[in-house]
Length: 597
Image (cartoon, rainbow, N blue to C red; front, top):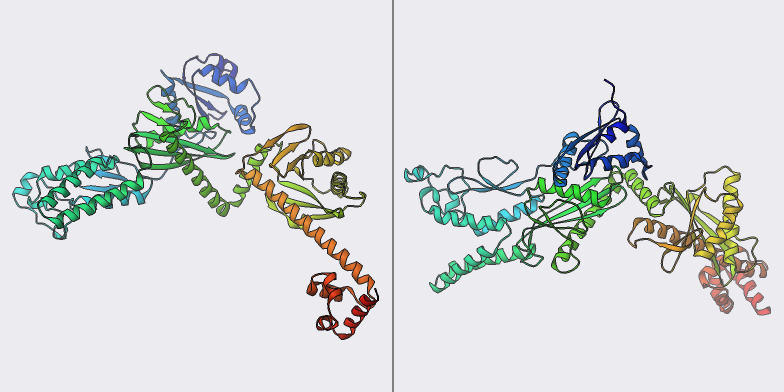
């Protein structure tokens, strides 16, 4: 049976919320998406040309559209997440994580054991987690061990077995790590009270344990059992130390999840913090590779659903940086100030640090991918038609109007290509005219590249504001390169980027990698130009001195200038001081020359 045309498939879609699936000619899944209105959302893919090439490629491949209608938008979000994980479509971001994270288990048994596990067994036991940080798990287990002496054996401590005397106390009892419930030396009620206190600690609530320990310490002190009171005081110290390290917000903030996102051109990083009784009891950052230039809103929405499902989160309130649609059952808070804003800022900081860490690792492990990411980011930030793989930056140098020179530095794939650097002596300009110098240098540079059939850059950066940029543009127009090469000017004072024909400058984020690359280019051009200018001035000064003294060559004069630091000091030096450097006969010639002149 022949498949209906795409137009017909779209026309017959309902106006209800649901999930749509795109398939190619071989019936392979391409993409899964959710919509408030299926017909409107799917139609939007086909009635315009999209900004990104990948989305246009996806649309061209679609042959079949399938859909599932659901009662609410929340159901659509949950179903979309599950289908993405199950079907793994090529054009969807993948939020699956293959790691198995550890849990802390309170075993359902008489005299419950508490231990770390990676396997959840549905036998009525309680599981807290999963924890993404092993250090955190071991810290919590060490804390529990310090505070409460629990059994570690796997005996079946039923009432009948204990009465029958089946078990004997082990070394753990003798060294004080267990109170011997196996021989009936500790009652079930007392043991259970400890388990209840541990349950509260795992939930992030330290208040009850602290209260119990303080009451017990005071009791021991009143009974003059100072050794026991000291032991309890040490436990209070351990608990306070752990609490102070994990408490960072108002204790009234309880059972709230915090989500934030930091993204660049190729990936996004979603950080999640779980807050209970004013303490962070869990933190995790999820990296998401972008596939179709997804917005932060879309990615955060998907990540929240995935993380809540993965970590079994049941909180009714979440804190996020901007509005996303998560249905009616979750209260969404977007704080502007106060304690909740502080905790959101902490989450954003965690996401940023994680991103920096990942990028550093990427730069070492996969430098090509690192370069591709920066190039894509620069293209987007600078609104360029292509990635700026080859960039050239120009800078003029003339100090007090003497020896006007210019420098051109070249970056390829974001790195300095020093063998392509060029110095220019300004030939046609009289006096210190920076604008005319820029016009000459840019013309000479690209006239030569065109004559020699060399590759042209994708981006030219002019060190200077609107005036310098206009001067460079005269040469670009004269060579008919307008539109073939992107050109921008960078003003020193406020790092303003100027574009041809646009009086309003572009300001980049001061921490952006694009601005860092541009600043690096500008600083390198300045350094390269200044070095050449100084060399030229020194040589000019040296030549004037050398030409004046009969019998003294350039090499001798250079040695003298390096020793005496200037011609003036050389004139004031004694014959003995000069002869110590270049010998008696040359010293006499120099002294005689300066005496007669």
